Length: 93
Image 1 (cartoon, rainbow, N blue to C red):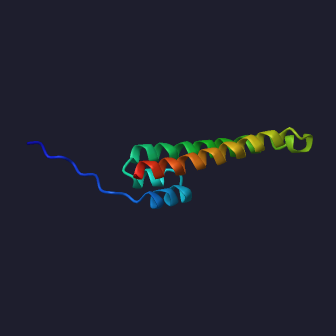
Image 2: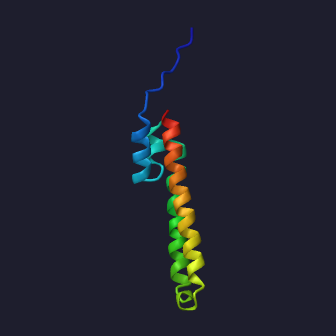
C-alpha cells in the first residue's frame, strides 16, 4: 500500500501577511516555493526595469509626460501586490 504524503496545514492569515511583507514569501510558506520564487523574481525584475526607465526618462517630468507612466506603474504595482497576497491566502487553505 503506497504511503500518502500529508501536507502540513498552513495558516492562511500568516501566508497573507508574509506576502504583504515580501512578495512571494507567503506562497513559499504555503508550500509552493517555485511559485513564490517566480513572484519574487518578477517583482525584482519589474522594479529594476521601472527604476531604469525612470532614470532614463527623468526629463519627462518637466513636460508632464512622466505622470501617466508613474500612474500606470503605481496601479500595476498595487494590483500585483494585492493579487499575490490573495493568492498566498488561497494557497494556504
